[in-house]
Image 1: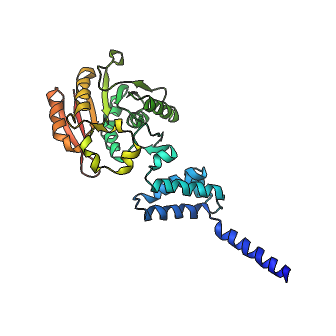
Image 2: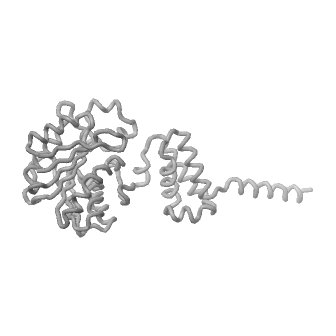
Image 3: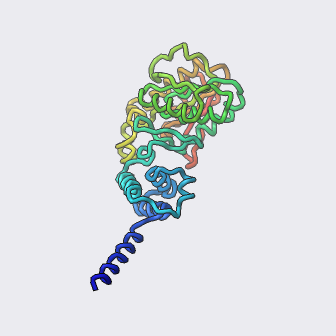
Length: 304
């Protein structure tokens, strides 16, 4: 009787262990369901990134090993990451990287997370930069370096300076330059956007920038996770001077762009007309507003 009982108990335990085990694919699907229930929009992308990072596999490896069982400790890690994300922590900061314009980028809390909206800026500047051949480009307020690196990766004769004042952001710029094998043509440099630029920087054929442009009073309309986790110095400008960085960028462009050279900037959609008039008053020509994927005025293109 005892032997029969013991055999039955062992079978139950084996069955429970099988039920508790989960394949990598089922783990991914579980996480995607949790994110959907939590109100996340891009559930497939974020579930995939959290699962890959948590189990230490590439996307290809996750697909290949989808039917294999995930070790319990890795499953726990993925679920802990998911809980932190549902509590507000952005995926890019949890996993320490994000993709922009097809490039893998290191990301830390010292830089903004690259947004799809900013790819519009690259789309606008890229044909011009490619048409120049051998040229010099400045990415002003570079952050992670995403814009300048995207241009350098798609325009093989372009030489790009990533100008950034934050030491933490400069470190990320250097990491991303190395990660994408662009050290031969991309140079991260300390540049204070609000001070007179060093003449040693020389002239440029193109300047691109996504500077701080959100006014302090706009905080109340922003998502809580952005306010809690992303660097405020890369986001905000004083209410009394919403065009602070655009004035500095415009003045610098007038002095350092080659004749006919172009300036491309991302803007606060609430100040599109004001930014246009500012650039015109500084002597920049053909100042044109461009819209993003959501039909919002998102960037300005102009030339010297």
